Every structure is written in C-alpha cells, then in structure tokens.
Image 1: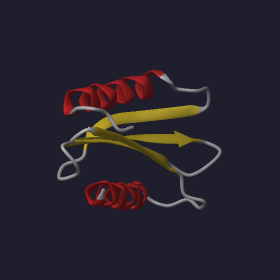
Image 2: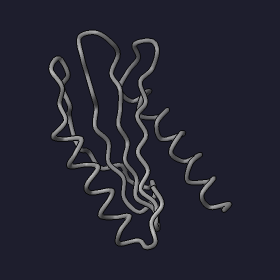
Image 3: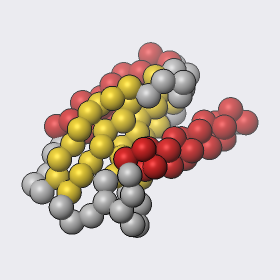
Image 4: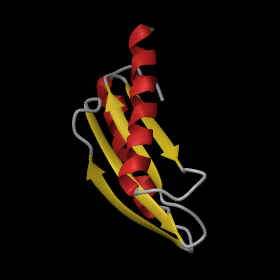
Length: 101
C-alpha cells in the first residue's frame, strides 16, 4: 500500500500485523510476530505452519510512506530460515523498485 505520509503507512503496517495475528484458520498455526532488523523502517515476520504443506512466512515491512506485505509459501518443504531469506529478497526487490520511483 502507498500512503500520503509515513504515519499512515505505519498505522497500516501495525494493522496488518494485528489482522494476521487474528486470522488463524483451522489447521494452521501462526508464530510471531518476530522483528526483522535492517529491513525498511520496521519489519516483522509471522511463520505459518500446517500439516498439509511447508512452512510459509508473512513478512510485513513499513518504509517511508509504504506498507508492504509479502506472503511466501515454497512449493517444496524447506527450513524456516530459507523461507524467510526468500521473503526478504522479495521485499528488498520491492523496496528497490519503490526507491526508483
């Protein structure tokens, strides 16, 4: 989401974190949020696990006047750090694209 100011983007970031914490579906377990340092102004990740598939991450980032949410679910089972690393790469690419605008 893009907003007219940093304060509105921060509010959206915080709202996204709260909404994710409240949106647990049957058969899923959400762990977090855990802060992610050196990514945007502020970032946090939730780990989403289920018995049906591999761990996914929901990574939320606030940077200037933008609130970014990335859901990354790998096709094949892998480790939490590997899934998080992939989501961080996607977020950094998105932030780089915003910086060019």
